[in-house]
Picture (cartoon, rainbow, N blue to C red):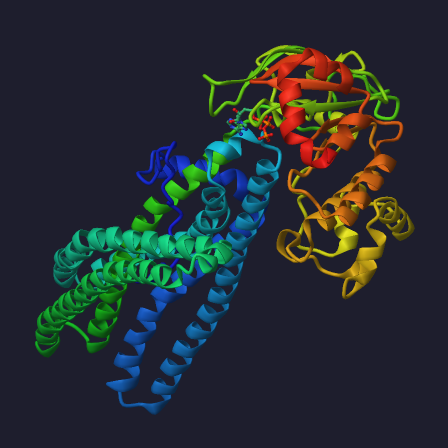
Length: 608
Ligand SMILES: Nc1ncnc2c1ncn2[C@@H]1O[C@H](COP(=O)(O)OP(=O)(O)OP(=O)(O)O)[C@@H](O)[C@H]1O
């Protein structure tokens, strides 16, 4: 009985019923998986042929054993013995060949199907609307990609063929048994369920425990993951020993569950062995007496025992696989659920009534009576009936207290979400009628905390334009005032930035993000200024880089600095999702008390 060791993929999720109790029937699961197996039908047929072939050979080995015993061992010609041995060897050779083909094809199929499934799931995930990831933990999604698919790999790539082979063997062995000796067959037919009973009863308990054990191992993993991710916080609050203790608790829980499982399993194995041999003993007793009485040849008896053991193990395998199948239906269901989620905002190249040619956009952006709440907080309006126009090539600074909806406007403009009411237009065209690819290609974003990938500088700058030449990348880096510091990195542009660019300072990260945006050369620029003050020199460089970047583009900036605000063509003051005032700095100080207060508080430092 093979023990499955995959960590279970059942991390509980708060807002979604964990689907461990399979809602899919085995047949539905097969139907769902079939679409992934179908392209490899020929492999499947090849594997099936090899499977039937090896099963037949295995069954005929019983006859080989009979020949060997009757002709070779108890007969007295050594020629007959040699012949019998040769027949047995030939059968073994054929079986080895068949097993090679079957094992290779079936395992190949399992790996292939899972590879395709992983790709399909990933391809689907990257097109999903961002709010999906707010309600579904990334850890859960990852575990579907890895552990759930591995479970299926086991089913397709081994268990299923094992079950099929066992079923064939069972039927074959039973037929041969009945032909060999009816009386003994009856003993077997009574004995098999007897051996099976504890396997079925106990097996269920063992399986439950092994699932619990895998869950607790998954907990251990995610616990360690979180601590490692926040290692600096752990160390700066000197919580190492608390964390060690807490982790030890998790590990011990996992160990205890595992110990209970192992004990049950050990007991199960012992009982099964005992029953198996008791049954074989009974067979030998009854059959042996028949043999002594001359009613049966010794070869027949040997073959009989061979088939009986084969039948027993076939049944055991099937029951084991049955349990695995149940777990796999859960995994399949979770994966199919994930594949069925439809993106609320379709990303595609098939433009639907896209009216704006990618290159010709002038870049006028308008929000027309836009209202919006985040799907995870439907009762809390993030934007309320907001009207706002940014003329092509002009810049607009957004200011307002925290939570006013500034970032939300940028998200809406990029169509990560759709407004509940009103519309957003680009050059007069509702962005909902545009292909999201076309829309987003017009824009570049420089976020407060730029997203950098675990790769070198080339890769990170080129992210906005993958086909850019080295010269273009360097020119963009120069324009972003990043070239000098990049050259001082250990390997210049080839330097790796570490996970999320941890090897760079905040200002450096921003300048890389600016270089990326410059390289993309968009019509519309979306900036989220860093709130944390950069040192004077960094600040100077970033501002210079931004001036270069903003030239001739429609720019919307979430502004935290007076300098930026003074340079902007217009300033929009937001409060609780509403536009409360718009104008230039001097006017706003006069007409908007909120702006005046913000200017005094927020921009004081920068102004000073
Ligand atoms: N992903 C989200 N899910 C649910 N609510 C959100 C989400 N993001 C923001 N909000 C809420 O929407 C409102 C507007 O948030 P937004 O981030 O746009 O404000 P902001 O003006 O950019 O603030 P800050 O200056 O602090 O970044 C806030 O009340 C916030 O709590």
